[in-house]
Every structure is written in structure tokens, then in C-alpha cells.
Image (tube, rainbow, N blue to C red; front, side, top):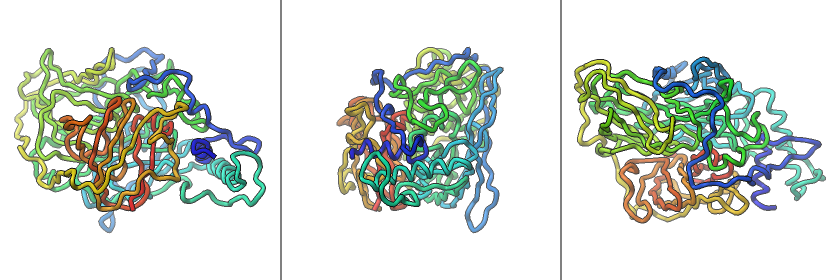
Length: 545
């Protein structure tokens, strides 16, 4: 039996395949697009509704999640995933799927070294799995794609599909009736099912950093994030507290994503099955990635934020499925300087000036923008130089008041930063991200198989991992953070600085990273964070031993 066929059985067993007449429907069409796949980031799905005016909506402030209780040094949170109505486009009510029914979900504020536990209740019509992106988490709280919270009324269908799969495997054939004993439980090495809710444990034994959380259900991450299952999280520590950086209302969390809407103002996405049951994946024309034509910041289209003529700390997150941004801050013909102070994994050693901010999906940039030289009344447009038409602008700042600014950007940000060296690596591994024969997004020529691992690094070691590609692939490692060692045989780009968990590998590029394995043993993922690529098999396991 080929590994591709095995994976299709796994897709069905997750509860996303249909059970009909005692057999499980295959997902062959998932891997056979009829249209071409370009080297571009993705394909625009045009909205059927008239696009809203830019810079009319006020930038929303996302509420902070409060713990329901604190005991024994642990903060406990409760979150419910549910459908709700949201006001995104003027004049329309849009149904979203949200954590606590809002999009984006509530922001989590946490302290380094203080454990939190988050209980997720699933009131949606499909299974979910929540991943705390950037977190150093135990493997059983990492949000693995087959570790599912199954909503009430869905479990019997899931169990039936799983038993059908295991029956065929026990019979030694990929089809036909089972002749032997049918297993009574799904394989615990592959599947974990939690009825209605489960609790994730996050020790947070890591430095201050901007994290985020999102759905990670196998083959349906793309549409489930698109519907709203995404939110920001921040870890704070004493080293960051010591710095005299902009804070309070001068620190802004900006979650950037793109979406498309139908004529009724509802979110539209090219799923093969709009009910997100069977099959997974997108229609062939969008296999390279889905781009929306409405840009949202904190859930509002092209919003405006009124600011004082002081420095602001901006916590930028690219939460788009596939879109890449190149951000600049323009006041008329003038581009404001951007000072980067942190990346995915926290503060840099020292600040650095960037002319623009290139952000692939899942990357975070911690920057300071100084409005102090601008007179009251100045408008600053956040432009996207790699976007065309409406996608060429993201939001606007308006300087509407004068205030005294006492904050500074120190010359040294992080004294605890440890720079990795090539000699630290105990081994070298290559992960090739490529569209393979049969139009399958693969890692090292294979589609994702939850039972197998491509690497077994040892806890407490550093390895050099070489990422190669054919198209744009933002590569993300769970658990293990890394530092970029080289890009295309030369030095890393300036925007590669710092500890990271996601790096964009450009078409036919080679990026080498030094990966440090700390925290926990167990099975984790390395995958492309273009969600359409991820959903259509571009993931692989590594097991920390």
C-alpha cells in the first residue's frame, strides 16, 4: 500500500471522509489540481460584494482574556469556540467562527515561567485542534493535527470512519470488507479524541515573545483560520520590563490578514466541501494559496488609528493564509524609519533600522515607529509594496495630538541573548519543500503521514537544518526555535535576525537554520505555513528523543 493511499485513509479517519455503504471515500481529487500552480504566493479570490472604503473604520482594540482563577502558581483560562455574528463590512453582518465568538480571538497576556492552562470548549460543527504558535509546549498540548476536540454529535461519525479504516488495514487491503476482528478503539499513536473540550497546558518556560494561537486541524486549518479561529498571545518577562519601551496605549497589537466576501457579506473560501467534512483542501485553481482582496487589521478593513506625535511599539503578526507583505510607513512622499526590536522569538540583541518589513505568513515583527517629527494632522499610510490595487495599502495612522515622549530605544535590548554558531550543530538535515509527482505538496518527496518522522533530534542539542524549495514556502517549526545561519549560500537577510520559528524560503532558495531542541521530548511538526500547502500534505513529523 502506498504512503499516499495511507494518508488518504488517515484523512478519512479524522472524520473528514464520508462513510457510505460500509466503505470510506478516498480523497484522490485532493492531489490532482486541474489548473497550474505558479511561483507566486497564491491566487486572489475576488469578493462578490463592493469593497468597503479604505480608512473609514477605527482600529479595533482586541480584549484581553482574563483568567477564571489562579491557584498554585497557575492561571486558568476558559475559551469557547463558537459561531457568532460580526460587523466586518459596513452594512453587513458576517458569521464568523471565533474563540469566545470574536474575530480575532481575545489576546492572552502571560508571564515567562508562570504556567497557564487553557480549556477550549468546541461548540462548532467540526473538530478543532488549537496550536499555540511559538510556544515551547509539551507534545500533548501542542495542537497536533490529529489531536482533536470533537463536538457533540460528531463523535459517532468519527468513530465509524476510524473503525472502517482500521478494519481494512487489519484485512491487509485498502478496500473490501473486514474479515477479521474490528478494533474497538482508534490507534492511540495517531489519534487523540477529546469530546467537547480539553485543557492545554503551557509551562511558558521561555523568554518574552509575541506568540499567537490558531486552529491546526489536519487538512482544514486554512478554512478554519479563514473563518476566524486565530488570536494573539504575548509572553512578558523581567528583562523586557526593564526596558524603557513604549507601553500601555502606545503598544499596539496588529493582527493582519486578508479575506474575501460573497454578495451577502459572508466569508467566501474555495473549499472543496464548504461544510468542512469531506474532502479537505481547496479547489484546484487556488492550490498555490488563497489570497483575499480585503485587508483586515484586528478584524477591521483598512482601519485608521489616531496617535500622538510620540514613539509607538507595534506588534505585527501576519495571520494570512498565504499572502506576503512588504510594509512601509509613508507620510506623503516620505517614508518613516522603522526600528526592529524583536522577531518571532523575542527581543533582538540590539535594535536595527529597516527600510521595510517583509512578512511571510506566521512571521511576527516587533518594531518601533517614531511619529515625533510629524506635525499634528499628518497622515501615515502603512503601504504594502508587494500588493496591487486595494492590497497595496493596509491601514492608516493619523497624528491628532501632541504629547511628551519620555521613552527610549536602548542600544542593547537583550543581554541574555545567546548567538548560535555552526560548530554547535551535532548534525545536518535537509527538508525539501516541493510540488512532487502527482501534484502533491510534499516534504522530502512525501506527503504528510502522521505515523512517521523524518528526524529524531536529541533533546538539548542543536542541529543545522537546510530548507530548500521550488515556490515560496514559509517554513515553521513547532517547539524548536532557530537562528538563520545562511540564505542562498550567503549571509542571512537583515530581517532574518533573532530567534525565529518561521522563515520564508523563496523560489528555488536554500535557507540554513540552527535549530535548538529544548523543553520537551515527543512528536512535533515542521511544515509550510502557507495554509493551503499545509492542508494539502506539506507537513512532516520530527520526534525529539
